[in-house]
Amino acid sequence: ADKIQAVPAAATKAEKKYRYQELDHIYTRLASRLNGYLNGYNLFEEVRNKGFQLNDPEEYQRASEARKEIWGLSYTEMGQELERIKQEILAMFEQNRMDVKGEGRVKTTASLHEKVHSRRRPEIKAFEKITDMIGVRVIDEDIDGALGLIYSWLNHQDISFVSETKDKWQKGY
Image (tube, rainbow, N blue to C red; front, top):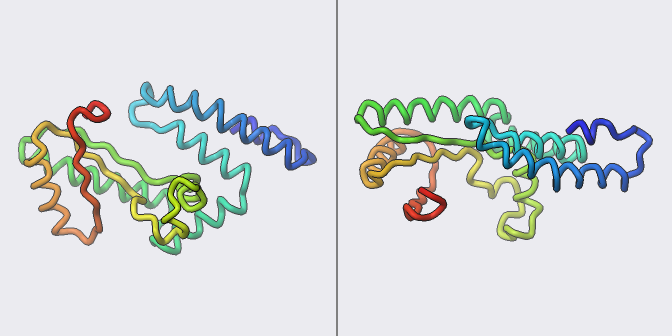
């Protein structure tokens, strides 16, 4: 993000766009490769999100405000809620003597904007249509046992959810 912050205020729109594209095409890719060494910290999303914020502050603000207005939580508050949910779920698995791996993520402001404005997802034209603001992944060999516990937990919560079971050979899971 220093690449964009270092652009002089008098820079043309084309110069700013060039710097943003450089950040997006080079530095976010490097950050993505480093993620594997950062123990859950997502440098890729942070660099991408910061680049979007600096490149298009008005759209960044609009997406941030939409998040707060529609879902009632800021990005930081969603991160706190995700951690609470993960801890509760992992504790439930531990109580049932299941050794699972749990991961989660909050959709960044840049990802929100991209999902609404991208041609890849033509069915999503408004922030209100986004259903995956917070995602939790539970990885375990005993799929049926894990799903049973998750469904039981979800039935006691006020959380809408989509269940997607991956074939164990897809993406290494």
